[in-house]
Image (cartoon, rainbow, N blue to C red; front, side):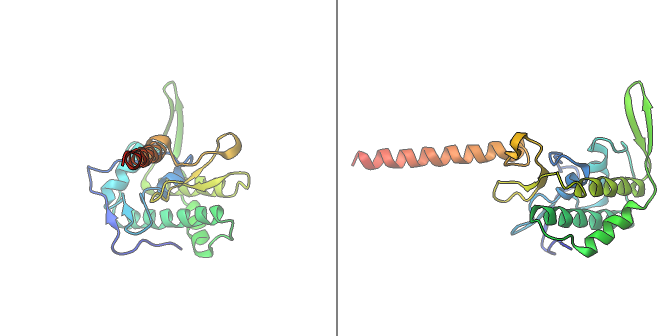
Length: 202
């Protein structure tokens, strides 16, 4: 199973900005490591960061409490989901240790779901949230028709579901990475054009 290096850079409570672009809440949890190359950036530095992530994730309770034990359980589940998703990207057998973690967590208690005039509401504690995320991850990982991809921007290691027509999506999200890639390509073309024009003038 994938584990983060001890020198991983962490986010700071209150300054963390989460994005939900992977197409599945379990994959969004796995994406709370902004990059896994060189110096990984972990956005879940402390339990309060996890509480914030749950509150911002669609379909999860607005408020949960995370202690040290459940926080570590969440990180363990996150890494298991990431490893299994990467297995799908690379078309290789699932990692047995990660399977044990996600299957074990999925057997836990379920969130309470209620329907009202204002929509769907869920409630429950963090143990229930993690069980829900594990089940969500299992459902999508078991879907052999789902297209798993890693973001095409250098440095971004988010894994997402490509549901675009013809599966032509290249980035985890346009705002998060696609526009940055296009802007960098534009700057490169401008520099090349300036250099070429300067050479012609000599």
